Length: 165
Image 1 (tube, one colour):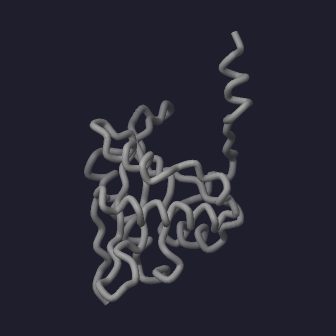
Image 2 (cartoon, one colour):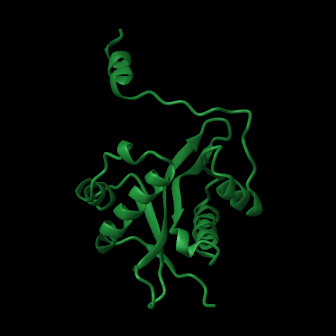
């Protein structure tokens, strides 16, 4: 078996990226929550100063797809450690491509970027119900940050908070 080929996403990848984003949301029973569109993804990813990066793993030539998965990430800053870190928003591999090394290749690629560019660490969130994902990440040397919980404010609550003085 040949090693997965990882590369930075190009504009021609947007339709398949959007399909995988929808598949990821569907996997988490959140398909109705996706507001992103191919146009919005293209605009945000390929603007003059994009705020995030996407790497893709190419599918073998005999595949029904051009891409087997992707990682979407952006730089962040650790106030405690005083240095840059990477926040990985999503790592997704098509179900039929899991177990081929695609996910590990995407995560290893991100680790190489972190090391070569001086990032302190990579952080991400995993749904507590995603047991296969949790096992995968633990096998790669990740550790759970169980003493922290994730919160968000959006929609009406965000607008109400913004209106406060």
